[in-house]
Image (spheres, rainbow, N blue to C red):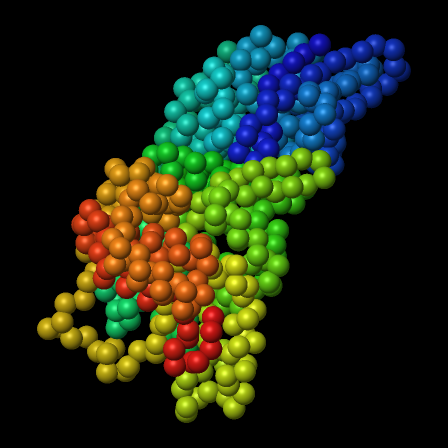
Length: 508
């Protein structure tokens, strides 16, 4: 019996799969079967492998060929089992050496002509192989992706024949070239200096970036909500090495990792309001990561928030608290990280002009109440910063050379300083503070406690909202480079809570 190594992923967890190939006698013609709880894509591997063998002029002997994917109680999916199955058959036919191939983790889809095609999950597979003392055999187009894990033994053939020639010593495969990581992602586009006016929204965005807080912007169409949100990554700190690798692994599992390098810029995922629950949370037959996991260590932007299906939005509630999401299916559960920063935007009403006597409809404010009530209270309570984004006065849109407009780089310097204070003090951003950790870094004087308690009682603030005010105040103090919060920090933090929509006269 031949046994080679492959892999599947249950969320971010790797599971080693033994690809066992056995040729048994007793039949007048070849018979090919795949067992081991394989899905349709794996079952179809038999036909792809049979045609690839024909392209190599290799005939199966008149024997029973059985491929077992072990452990048998774990569901197998994906076309990446093609290559290890084909290699196992070639080992059984003494065309490839089993003793050498057993030292590799093998994955790749095989074409009918024997070519080796791109597959998903090469980066996390190479990380696992490197940790477990194995080399990796993967498609030629993904050799540079495997190299990103610092693994030193990589074989990346274009065709099965290249692999055969390599082990026979006829023509050794070249080691993959290191990718040019300087062009792996589009450069950050836009700058905060291009946003005219909106000082209050810019300030709130700075606080959000510094403390990792979720934020909701409410304002009429054309007021700059999307423009502001798209510039948030330009004021956020650079990703750490650990964040880069973790984010890149998620994109590799999802099949969205560029061949040019790792994900080095913080993700910005702008999700359309027609998104389904599965596209947001992840799932499908192979439990792929969804948008909230693809936004891990970055920004998840939801424009036109009330237009989303309510059941879709409710998915956000648990990941926003825990930083991860579990995808439960009948046969298995998969857990992905989902430590994203939510930035949402919405109009105050369906027409978007509530409060503007010249443009708003005659159904106000009832239409606004119904529109805003599409968003549940528990979800709104998890959003730290609520900001009104008013329409910009045309006179403010001209460039004034006498007035200095801060650039993203200037704002980012303050954000990085505040983040560094948080990381050195508690090891994580303020948005994650809770319990005793929150009380230890937010020291309240009796005057502050009385002020916040009175405010909480008057507006009916929840215990979660109460703690969020303290977290925001802590971030404001960090931006000011202060060790302790002051009353003004609490006052500013309270101004970002959804007390009342002000001029709209509608509670949110």
